[in-house]
Length: 197
Image (cartoon, rainbow, N blue to C red):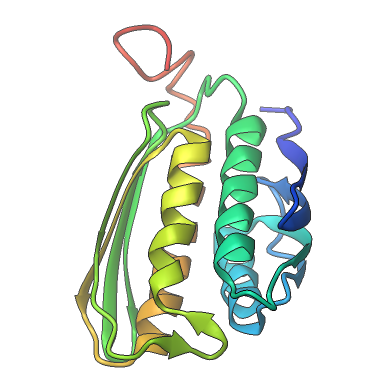
């Protein structure tokens, strides 16, 4: 289908200032500056492995901690996904990936149902991975799922290394989202018996 699926979302609060552009039909290019180095690394992997083009500029109250910045980037990314997907006509709607990364094995499953729901089944052994609080991984994906209106399940099936587990989460999420947003020529309208999502 010849439809441009690009969204630019800007969000400014007393805690953060974020400008994000997402192209669902990109080539995996990214320019990311969140102020949180490890999150930048994760979002670059998300773009590369989902074949999305992603541009992000964010500043936040990192002197407090990373919570507001990470959560608000999740909100903005989820909003961009929702806007870029549009009316969902012709897309597969569902996507999943079981992705290995060394010791880690992570499952991500998505339904772009319009009904937000989030499940994360994972345990981290450390409080931080790089400069990212591991507790914020949950907050990020929760924010994405609710802003996008998606049902998102992420399960760490195995793994000991927090870096590998987190990276496998972002990459499996990217691959599942790529599948869910891809077009299937057999789907002529919206993939729901209700006729809308």
